[in-house]
Image (tube, rainbow over all chains, first blue to last red; front, side, top):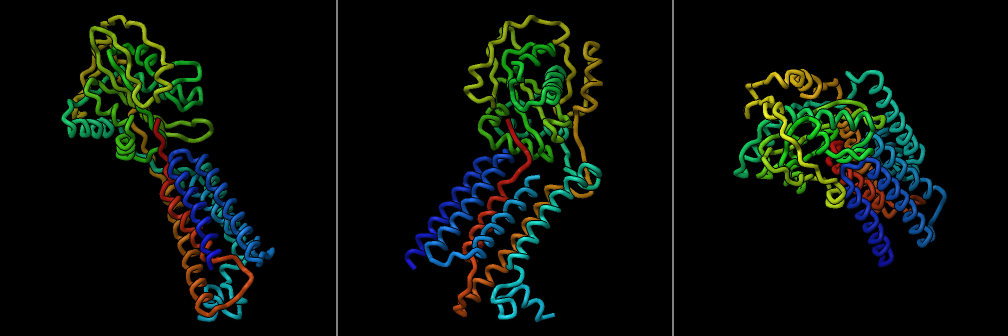
Length: 81
Length: 320
């Protein structure tokens, strides 16, 4: 449980950093999109590492994180039109 | 019907304890759907901009009125529209479109002051604010006031005159609405210009203007009253009236569907629904102690929640 909290703490830091940088670059849509992609990739990385450490990393899980990140990127790309 | 909804939205043994809406094939379908939507919007915008486009409603009179309201609220004298400054603003906007740049200084080294001098305005102090892709006049002035450097320009007590240009065109392959706001004050002695929102580093590189000779014609500008109702025009500026009354005074576009509104509504609704399904899934899985090979719904919720917060930082308008 303690490990879980630590892992989710790292996730919160990743997401908070991405969100803050997104706000910081307000007005520059290209840079915002790049930050969105980087944050999404970091999320996939977090998911893989977290599940690997939990010893329940399965290809299905990786695909799920990749698809969730892809959803975020395409929705972001649509809103940044 | 109930069984179908349960199968799609709730973890159940019929869907291997994972809502069908969260299965990999469903998630992949969402990605494709948004990719198609994205492409469709681009095509529709190119082919039918009057149906799906960017709503814009920016008028020079409104910009002047809003700017003067801010000055009055700070106890400063209102500014008077000056045709020469407006001409300089129009030429600056045209230059940005022609040379494909978005900056105070042009790629070939022309400063805002060069445009002002060429227009015949004999300034003792001058400044420039730029904005692009805002949807209305209020949004432009609000954004300028929210930016310390642009706000300083608007609330500078030295200024007496102001000029605007609102121009629509294609900048670096993207349809763009530019707003150029130029401030100035005439005087007997030419002083250093105050470039306003140009960053300090850029200020240092702005060449000092040479003393500007007095040009008689420049002393008889087109004057629009502060209410924007009366215009006194001199012979020297007859050509300007046509210039300023035409394509530089306002940009109004009213497409049937406004792209930023449509995409924002769809984006928020979709991510909101997805978060709702994940929240219910997470709650049921935790309550029933179901073990399954899948990602953490809580992690997805946090990720999508951050995305929703980020959405609020998306704005089309940019200042310089």
